[in-house]
Each structure stands twice: as structure tokens, then as C-alpha cells.
Length: 469
Ligand SMILES: [Zn+2]
Image (tube, rainbow, N blue to C red; front, side, top):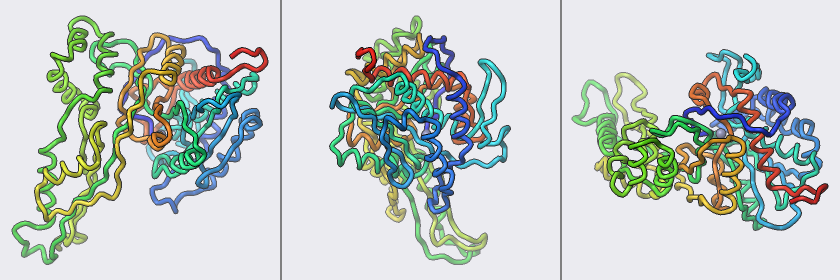
């Protein structure tokens, strides 16, 4: 998903003209297809997914003439635009599945793609507008217009569109398997993630483009206590549920240790240079102010707290089936987001030590390590940086560690240059609709995203007609 923990920004306009209506109508048509990912995969209605795949060649005829397309893992799409030379390719990623939605509580139905307002206030409503069909359409528009202008990429350009990012991410994994089997090592992979925001950093008033250079790992862990059942009228001193509750309380008393990762430090130094007065001094003298800042990050907001440590949250609890029966088994699910620099093993060990009770069984049904950190120098970063600044003039670009998970983590297997950035300015209200009711995007915001990808694809291209590179 797009990282929801980011506030909004106002950005001055830039100059690359984008034809507003066709891209918007394309997005509306694709939002109307309810491509809902289901945790229970067998409950998925595949008809909208098939319709989505069928619609693309009609909406993007030039692209489908110039690029080859493979359907992978049933419904994921891998496009290849052959380059003029055999340098390392670029991969532009997005996903077209969405989180389920019913009409309940929506001001405008989730799959109607209704427009309201006008001018800068014009809004497109619908599930997937922000996460992530907006990005997917922006990528397609950028490539379609490049093909129409006669451009060809210098190195191969791949488009990787997953069909189950919101659940298991098997599509993206299968695409990486295919690319790996062909020995492909991308020089740049770009997926959803950070965005253009403001107000995230004390003392900095300029809009900030946060680019994910890594993402936290995830551990889903269960704590369970098994015990003989019996009637609730004659309970033992410590029932299974009480033992489990004690473990949870102990866990909550032992948060993971906090610390700044090198990416945190780079972000503080990058943004701190733009802060005013005394704050600038605080951010520029980390050797002295680091302990103070670490405490500040821990308290400022839930988001800044999550930036500096592994987090743990008990998300599910279960006990007895009946009101008058003791639980034979009490289970808690703990969702842990592992900080970069730590590991799944460290997280599990921390939990074991914190609860210190051998009768609480710990199981780890799902785990993925934090992603490697992509560099903030070199051609891939520079291209991303310049494209952002050209599209959003006056914006500060900073690396950060994405707190949520994306399909791009699978690409770390084949590339050292994986970045997570959705080229959209998201208002506070809009980011609150991610995975929730009333998801919507400003039409102007979406068009700026189209402009971003148009610019990026042009930069990757050689213009054949003029012979210009
Ligand atoms: Zn997403």
C-alpha cells in the first residue's frame, strides 16, 4: 500500500503540459472495475481482473504495439519495452488489486468513479484512486505518450503490475522469479510508497518528497496458552486467558529499543538544513543533540515513534467459545514491524525475553526481514531526484524508511536500487482514506503524477526521430 503516515503539501505549479481528459477517463474506467483482493484467495471474483487485463490494449494501443506483455501468476502483468542498448534495465511498478469496499459509509460509491467539484478542487472518488491505480495509470500514460512521440528507451524498460499486493504479493514474487531466471539486474526499480508531503518535520515549511529507500520487516507472531478446560465456576489460580493477558502486559512494558538508523540521520541532516534558527542548529549538531532528538521522535507522534524502533501491536485475541467455559486455548496475534538494522530473529527473541513464561508458546506463521537500504547517490537516485524536483519545483527530496510494506521488497533480490515513491501530493484528508472509506484523489494531483512519469520515461529514452539522446 501507499504509506498512510504522511501529511499533505502545497506545491507550486510546474510546466510540462499534460492533456487532462484522456488520462482521467482512463483512470475512471479502470477504477470502475472492482478488482478486490481477498485474504481468502478462493473468494476472489476474477471477472474484474480479466476485464482489467482486456481493457488495457484498447486504452493504450501505442504501448501495446511497442511493448511485449506476459501474464504471470494468473493475473500479474510484465511488460518489456526493448531498449536500443543492453544496459541494465529500469522497472516501473504498481498494483491493480484494491482493498475490498462496500457502499456502506461512502459519500460516493467506491466503484462509480464519480467526479465532484471543479478546478483545483475537482476530486475523483473511488477505491484504488490513490492505492494504486492512480500510479498504474500514470505509468501507462507516460509510456504511451513516449511511444507516440517516437521515443525508444536506451535500456530495457519493464512495467511490473501486481494483482495481489494487498494480500500475499505472489504476483510480484513470481515476476521477480521470472526476471531472476533471465539474469536481469535492474539499475532502478520504482514502486509506490512515499509521497509529496509537508509538516512532517519541525521547522521546515517547504514541501518534502519522501522517497522510501528501504522498508521495515514484518513478523506475525502468535502467543498461545493451552490448558485443561472446565467450568468457569471453578477456575484455576491462573487461567489460560489470564496467563496470556499477563504476557501481553509484560510485552507492552518492554518496547523495543529506539535508535537512529543511517537513513534517519540522512533525513534529519537533509531536512534540518532547511529548518529555521535554533532548530537548524539542533539538527546540524547530531553529535551533541542525538539523545534529545531520539526522545523527541519517540514522543512527537506515533509516526515518528515508529520511525526509530521496531514496533509491536497485539491485533487479535481469542479465548473460550462459551461464556461459562474456561478457555482450553487462548491466543493473541502480535504484529511486529522490524526496524532496518534489526532482524526477525532479534524481534522474536525480544518477545520471548519480555514475556518470560515458557508456558506461553510462541509461533511465527509469517516473517520477512527489513529490506536492504538503496543508495542516495549514483545515477538511479540522481534521476529520481531531478525528476521529482522538475515536477514539483521547490521541493526538498529526502530518503526515509517506509513504515508499511510494498511489493517492491521482493525486487531487493535482483536490484540494489529499489525506491518507493508515489508522485502524488496527498492531503491529510486523502491519506486518511487509504484502506478506508471515501478514498479519493484530486484530479490535479493525479495529473501531476502523470507528468512525473512522462518526464521520467522521456529521461530514459532516446528520441529516434531527432537522433537526440
Ligand atoms: Zn498499494
